[in-house]
Each structure stands twice: as C-alpha cells, then as structure tokens.
Image (cartoon, rainbow, N blue to C red; front, side, top):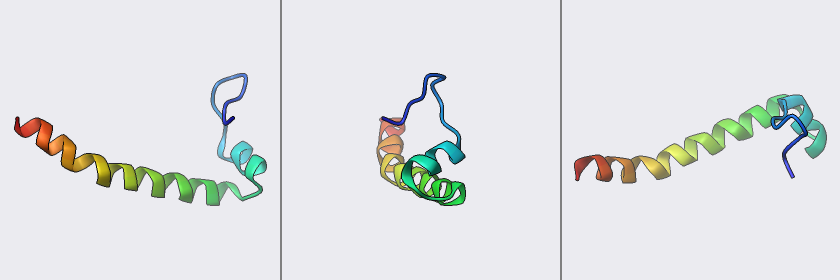
Amino acid sequence: GLSSPGGKLTLDQLGEQFGVTKERVRQIEQRALTRLREVLAPSLVETLAD
C-alpha cells in the first residue's frame, strides 16, 4: 500500500518505493490532480446549476 504507520508519506518516501525522484512523484501528483479537476468540474457545475 501507499500508507505508512504515521499515515502520510513524503515525496522522497514515495520516490524510494517506486524507484523515481521526488520531483517525478510531484509531477505525477500534479497531473493526477489536474485530470481529477477536469473530470469533476463538469459534474460540479451541473450540481450547482440544479
């Protein structure tokens, strides 16, 4: 899993687990958040319009 005993992992810790740099983890995180916003925005607008 992606959890640790403390609950949250740092970018460094995630990078170590997946064999990438913390900068790459940050880039992946930003891309995922952007995609979520793009997918959720239309349904949010629709919900607010009702």
